[in-house]
Amino acid sequence: MITEQLMPGGVKDPRVLEAMGRIPRHRFVQKGLEDQAYLDRPLTIGQGQTISQPLIVGMMTQALALTGNEKVLEIGTGSGYQAAILAELAREVYTVERLSTLSIAARRVLYRLGYHNIEFKIGDGTLGWQEKAPFDAILVTAAGPKIPETLKEQMAEGGRMILPVGSMESQELIFIKREGSQWKMRPLSECRFVKLVGEEGWSGE
Ligand code: SAH
Image (cartoon, rainbow, N blue to C red; front, side, top):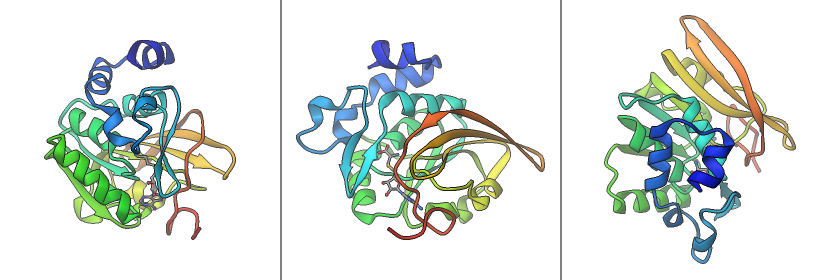
């Protein structure tokens, strides 16, 4: 996965490569799919949701340029795989998931793997996590029609955010950096994610 997918795909940050090399991705996929965990593809994690392919996870994580001291917010806990990577690379991770079944399963796996710097919340992540804001980095793993204003407001000065935005069929990964009262945006690549469902995302099912 590291030498055949991440490195040729453009993941260069040694800390990201090291963390992804260490984390057992097969522990986060559904029973019976363990032998596919390291392949270059997204995998189903139940409840109609998916864990992104390794290269997307690597590119999004790398874009946040984490050094180890950050407070990070993740929207869409899903399997907990991305949260594990963030927990290795930053100081504290706050992760929000709207589906309780997924949040509870992720919590169990991450606890067993020994992570103690992750806090979980079940709810609508398009509204962020107000009590814990501001965040040095925000990573959104489901795609909505627009950039949620609330998440922009919860970025710290100098903070970074990466999120997929677009229609149901085609989306783009957007990188945002907050500089004072300005939010500088840069499109990174085309992508395809599951739906971000919530007040500042898509409505209902
Ligand atoms: N980061 C996950 C990927 C999960 S897929 C991993 O590493 O496995 C995206 C997740 O976002 C799904 O579990 C979906 O239920 C969740 N989601 C969608 N809309 C959401 C919202 N408004 N708030 C929180 N989670 C949301």
